[in-house]
Every structure is written in structure tokens, then in C-alpha cells.
Length: 113
Length: 116
Image (cartoon, rainbow over all chains, first blue to last red):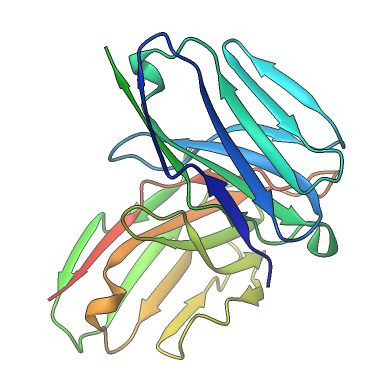
């Protein structure tokens, strides 16, 4: 079945350093979504990418969707303590469009002030 | 409150007991999802509904798990004869149809189950 993998599992950075998490799907995706879960909270939607090669920015966050629509990345420039949390990618298989979202295992980001 | 509501927020039960969780989605959302999350893992898909129809159920889900959405509004997830391995956060999420077919999920705060 469809699998979504993320690396790294953990990332510890000093405040001001950059952070990147990578997401790979075993199947071609119709779209990929990113969610953030703060400690003790629930996943909250950040962004959705639909087009091959798409790049979107949200302030210090840059999201990319691969040309083959099987991988994605999230890059945070100059991390702040408010960025702490676990970042999940979630993909919808192209053969199951409109169906279930499969989540990666997440990358937990900690930021040392 | 116009978000996704889940009840109860916490449930402690003894092994072998049955438990039921309720989810009230955003009212205009016709899709409802159940996920399970354990510590350090991503949400694991359990099942989803479009209106009252259960369209998919994970093969990982044993026969002890059942979900309903009788009138296409709220949903219940029941676990029969609970086991210690069922201890997890049970997350409900809802979404609406979009022209692109892409679902953006709004999650509830979850129901944390502890099986002793």
C-alpha cells in the first residue's frame, strides 16, 4: 500500500539556523499537504501543493513539490522558538484522488534559544 | 464553536471493556475521517466517510473497531474488548469536497484512550 516517509525524525537547531524536512511517497500523488502539530496539540493545516514542481512560500517557510509528484520538502529560514513542533507531510495518491490522506511519521523540530 | 469537536477528551478503561468516541465535524463538511496517533508517530488512517457512507476502512483495523455516521453529521468510533495496544490518541478530522478533489483536513483535539 501507499507509504509516506519523512526524514529526519528529529532535528535540533539553534535559534536562527535553518531547518529542512524531506518527504517521499511510494506512489505518485495528486497533491501533498503539510501540517504542524505543536506539543500537546493536534495537526493544523499549513499548505497544499498540487502542481508538479510547485514552490510556495509562507513568510520564512518554503514548500516544494517534486517534478515527479512523489517527493516534497519544507524549509524554514532562520528558525524561531515559535517554530517548535512536529511537521507532517500527507499525501493523497493519484489513483485515490479525493480519498484518504496518508501521513508521514513527522519531523520533530526543537529550537534552542 | 465552529471547529471539530471530540468527546470525551480522555478515557481510561480496563482491558476488555468497550469504549465509544464521538466526533462532531464542521457542519458544512461532508467528509469525516478517523485517525489514530501514538507517541512519536504520524496520524494513522483508520476510516473515512462521505456523508453517511463509509468509503474506506484500513486493513489494519481489526473487527473490534467499528465506526458509524448515521445521518451524515456526527460520527462514533467504537472499540470493543479493548487491548493495551489500543492506547492512543484518536483523532477525528473533517473536510469538504473541492473542485480539485483535494481534501484539506481540519482536526479535532482528539480523544486520548488509555487501556490499563
